[in-house]
Length: 189
Image (tube, rainbow, N blue to C red; front, side, top):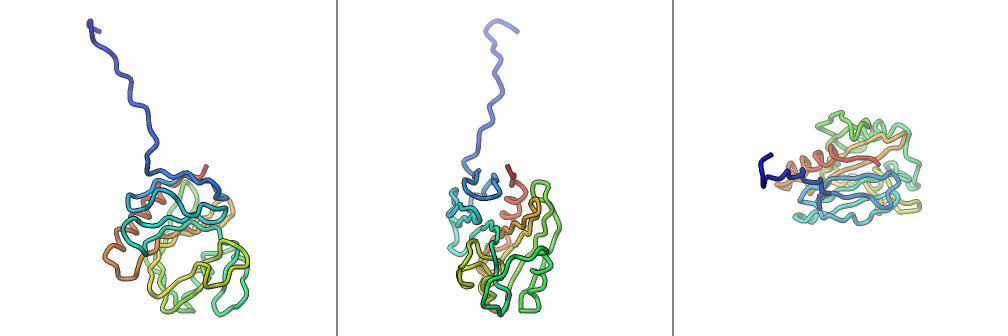
């Protein structure tokens, strides 16, 4: 090298301000968030991670480890089924509709992603993040919302993740694409 020239070291990698590391979630993970989502999850509990949108009140992303769920027309909660995907597809007999299904992986774990809608309220059918919750406080399919749902098998546990948007909103396709990009960047730690 000539006099006066220096070698500049390569820049150090930095953690993006849009990266979220779970604190309490039972399956620790790191997710890169789209600009549309708030950076902090609220809550970040053992069974639920939830992010709200910065842009649309009804847009949310959730990661849930269901403790129990309410099968349609049942008043008492039940344990999540071993074959959650078959159970979910079976909700079509109760007015649910699933479209655009794809098989993929999330950090090497098998996942099925689909869009879910319902003709009428199906309270609690997706699951409850805590025991002893009433069905209408748990997660389900609703006629005014569209969900892009991922059923992920993580070491024998069913992890549900979804993006929800108001049915018919102009940003649904964009929000769902951002969610799928987010899933591709999830790392289980």
